[in-house]
Length: 280
Ligand code: OGA
Ligand code: MN
Image 1: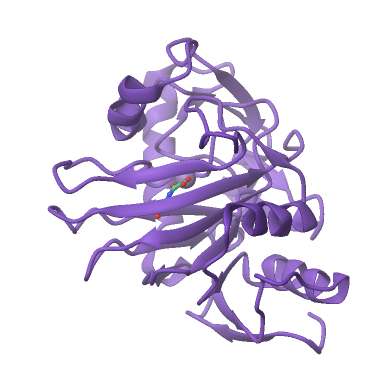
Image 2: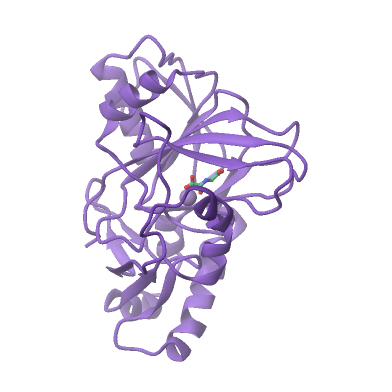
């Protein structure tokens, strides 16, 4: 970890997440500040900045300083801003987008390295998001389990029922023409983070279907254990949003799960994902 000159970082829990202070993104930030935020992201795996009520152009400009924005495959972006996806739950809706533990779009061959989520409208209470540290989940496994998993490849599908349910309102309203076709990604279940060199568990209950070379019946008991293990309370943190809160999470070493406890209230976020590489 660097000694920061521009930013402050305050941990949210023992193992994952930090709130970053001292930054005002709206007027634009220097390369040194960008480097410090990136360093904090690698150190804390998810970082949060408050009070960033950015225009769409400012949001996009900041995202471009961190990486290369990519389009979400299943839903169109905002008019004129294909890289910015609205993540919305309306007053009359009961299902929340992505409301299950996951890392983003692991059914793609090259899933996004990071996601930026900016809060525009939040409920008076509730609508927090949980994050889990997948390095910590890997590190806590026995040597025997690490050896077993080290040789396994997981298959992710865009059509697992629970995940599909969490986006069906949005897809039926505004889905892309091809959002019905199944997308499949095959990735090592233990991946080595390309920047930190650390090993992280890489599988999730929303998208992972089975291991390559094994049936679903054979894979499920192991997967179920790992899903439960990965989200042990000590591996997690919880973030409470305000309007203008911005989260940046590293999809290569975390999972997240938005809590659906605010029925009757609007929650509206803007999301940008940054292009990643093929997990190895
Ligand atoms: C996402 C997502 C979480 C939230 O945008 O990928 O999972 O808190 N959102 O809305
Ligand atoms: Mn997500």
